[in-house]
Length: 117
Image (cartoon, rainbow, N blue to C red; front, side):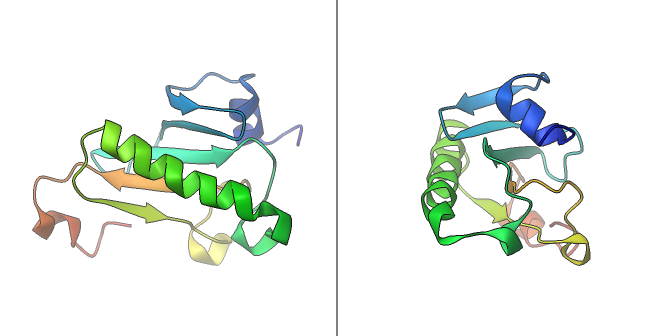
């Protein structure tokens, strides 16, 4: 999609601090972090949100979750959160499917704070 910022990041047309990339996904740091470590995992194909998934997207969704696990391990995270926001009412700001990987809190008590996504 021509005007989608995440499509531009996924294709490399817009720069990002990329931690991982393969033929299906890109992982990069969030410009608006909600946690000490806040990474975004995006598919390189344009899917507006979870609400727009089709059966043929099962592989890329699974891959996103496994990549999140791998990157969390590489970042040394012992605990973390994975979040998909769906639609404006669900907190989604950019209309391109993305998985938030959140972590890096000092203790489990901080990770359970209600103001954390």
